[in-house]
Image (tube, rainbow, N blue to C red):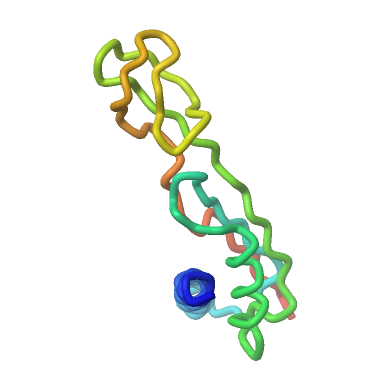
Length: 123
């Protein structure tokens, strides 16, 4: 049970950082309300999407994001085998190259965790 709470704290911290990023951008744009946000989360980022969604529900309360639609786009992982340079989407946490069977690869994408787009309201 403690592990689950620890994981939720990780996502809550991320959610609070997202709110902070959006509020800073809103201040620069001189806007008071946000209508929509797009987030990109890589499948190898270590973020549990469901836990992040729950954390965001709490973090946005009483913020400029309270009524915003939050779109989470999961970016699938892609790696490059360091032995044969074959690029592939791993099927497991340990990427086994389907070409040569090597287990070491460099991550090309899938670790992303970013605010991709913020739509400010005129209200």
